[in-house]
Image 1 (cartoon, protein in one colour):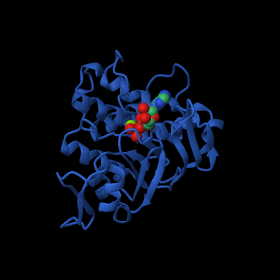
Image 2 (image 1 turned 90 degrees about the horizontal axis):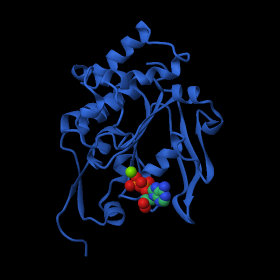
Image 3 (image 1 turned 60 degrees about the vertical axis):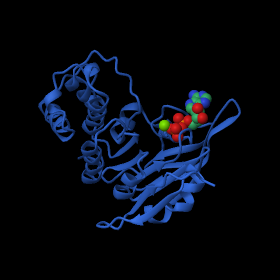
Length: 263
Ligand code: ADP
Ligand code: MG
């Protein structure tokens, strides 16, 4: 895949203020080339808002976002799209397109206006469909798919974009266990630089190099899963009691949330 392992993504003191309220407050975050970083935190922590600033859907009120050192707001759309692909949460489903067409949209930044699919593009689209286990749905209308199937198609589109860096907002939402693992294994296998919002802390622990925790718009912890995922942090940030043990086979921290109420 072109660009794999390149694409340092960085937020420099990024804040997003709406009506006087900081949804994202002074966030510094670096995803180094080839790293897969989990972005976790309770609902409303500001994860999606921060991710939007990375794929240029929202301009920071202050601070900068850079890809390989270059401010993304200074890049033209095609060049940014070749470097960075986004998989969004609850993407609109009213496309009157087939699954194939949706995935083929990933090739747009490589084409001249009105240029059709070349053989190479078709090969890339077919590989992406197969990778996400949706080749059998290629001719199906996108808006008839289940939530999980749609999610996989949108990830296939990002894959077909062949960007070295991906930003994914809860890509495992709606996915069954097998397909959740497939998505994270895929990110690791292709060597993409990725920032991925996840709710499942055990998936974050098993697959990510680092876990970055947001709460109230701020980054409150950022480090290796074993440094960050502690019972104290879970109590503080999520207000739950939990036991954290090493996974019996991999040694990665495993979070077991206890049913008890916090005192
Ligand atoms: P997360 O993805 O971590 O659940 P979000 O980034 O979606 O959090 O939201 C963070 C906070 O910002 C929430 O309280 C949400 O209601 C608020 N919020 C999100 N978008 C807007 C907006 N456009 N205008 C005002 N408030 C917003
Ligand atoms: Mg969100």
